[in-house]
Image (cartoon, rainbow, N blue to C red):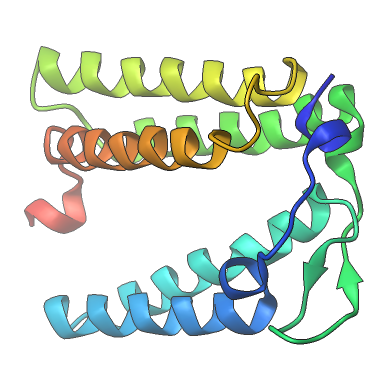
Length: 170
């Protein structure tokens, strides 16, 4: 059980290598800066995207490359232990949920329900990946995941509009 015991990462150098995560982080940070003219926010966006490699390095087995074309891989394999994954990733998730809820107040009931519903859906999806069986069709799993997380990002954007924080509303 658990993604770490059946997930085989392949061809991820363009999306998950340290070099490319740096490139994606720079592109997002530059776009954020050009739109908002807020350097601190751009640096936070850069760090958040770049942290993806560090978090994947902890979670993945040694399949994380430093750059496309390299043949040295890194990873500590957290995902191979369901209890450790629940404890560590779940702790990060709980911290993020509480931090966001404290930093952003809902505009009304829609903001409350939208937030806690997306938290519940993402938590269940995460738990299913951690402790559930492998997907029935591993060839379609990436497309289903992409569609699911694209909808989750759209939902999170909408939900975020219903929960303004002091920095955005001041």
